[in-house]
Image: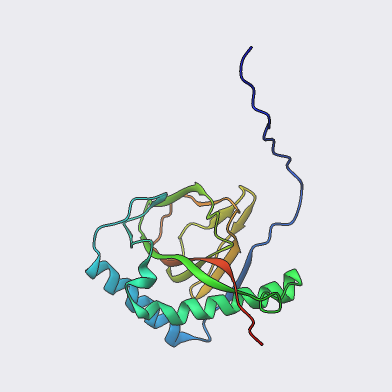
Length: 191
């Protein structure tokens, strides 16, 4: 008799709205400019592209936030936007539940013609975000679960649960992005 697994894993697909959020960051030009400077500095200080599911001309190291302090204002701003979306759209106050967000990974990527990203998720991160610093008009969209097509604009952030599968088809136009993965961390309340 063959050994059979005690647990069979099955996946049930349920029709539901996918929680993809986005907003403009253009009212924070100094934060966006500082992040754009960080991209150029990372390309100079760490010129080798990181191997991953991102098939771009350049991808910085996974922990780029530890290599430059110029990304911290963007990290803080996006974290605040995620917390606001949790309150307004998910009826969940992370701070009220004694949680905060911490960066798990942060990297930048420069896409040129024919670059793409294969389908993937950012699990086990709780939230994934993509900030669009530069975006040509003919740049490819980001596609979630092969269903939702998002065509972002320059200066926007798109964020979503880390488990959500997404990809970027081959692009025609240049795009420069920063990706940040966040995890929830418990906060000790000593009061």
